[in-house]
Image 1 (cartoon, rainbow, N blue to C red):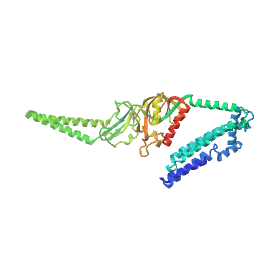
Image 2 (cartoon, rainbow, N blue to C red; image 1 turned 30 degrees about the horizontal axis):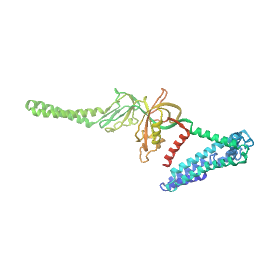
Image 3 (cartoon, one colour; image 1 turned 90 degrees about the vertical axis):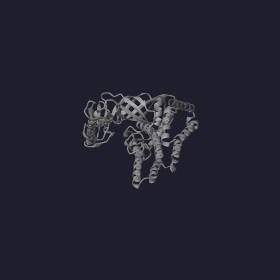
Image 4 (cartoon, rainbow, N blue to C red; image 1 turned 180 degrees about the vertical axis):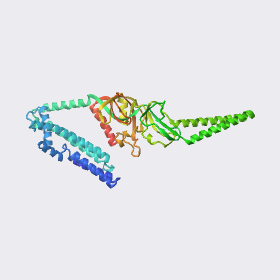
Length: 458
């Protein structure tokens, strides 16, 4: 285990010396060394400093070895029926510590070994990548093949089992068969989790159809409707001057037309065409001036966080100023990777469970309304990307942090909110989607296969 920790530190140093600056290298090494100290020396589940501190505190010497011996004793005594099996525990307290420490330390050692291998996979340069499969193979041999081989040899040749060998073999076969049946046959519910962002289902983006200077605006978070009040009011002196000029041209053409009607009919027809063109220009200018008084297209709440800084600002045609949203009608835009999306499309039930990020005590139900079959690259919000704590990897070359590093699929979900639920737009949520029931072995294979595809690119 210590060798794996040393290898991880060496991997960080190697990976950064080729691309990083000296102070960045130092920060990375200090960070990895600190984490390694906590995970190893400061953790009593591994046989380092904290292990001996715990053994001294509870006054149980050789805690790890005796815990393994006690777990072995339980199997021999109560499964195989060896009444003379040696019991290393003398008190109830020791029995508790042996069971607790023996199981948790084994699980933690396996877990931390897998995490180190995954860490090395991301950090090691290509010339040293061969270390990952070597370490993985040695872990399989040391943690699985060698113990199984020793157990089978003990079961077949041990003199301790001379009178109970048939029962030991039979009970072992039955337990293995029950384990295989439980893992490979018994169907249990399966779930997958995706992240999403809360957005209004009805959202109207407000933008002007002409350039202008802002002379008035409505404060953000105000309830509005098509009948008023006006969201933003702007002026355009150039358009006003053009309107007056066109009005004067139309008036002059009308005078000339009245004179031409009495003197020359052909000239009057030409002036009619010119008047029609002028009137079209006047109508277009009027529409542009009217668009500078922006009103809500539908009832909702006017949202424009920076509207108070726009007084006197020059806004351009098509520039987004704010939105009008119905905050009582919310939806969730969730994202899923390609592998996860394929499973959801094939196996997902429409009903889902939703929890706000950071608030696990409250669960809200919802319904999947639509899964977009085409992959996308632009995330609905920065909150779903790695840069601000989301689960989707983003393209490091995108300064906005909204371009995904790989194609993803979007899932539209309608939450069933009660009157007491108050969710905010832009809030990040976790959606648990129920899949078709399957065996634990099938679930483990599926997630392990996804893990290897994602981490080792195979």
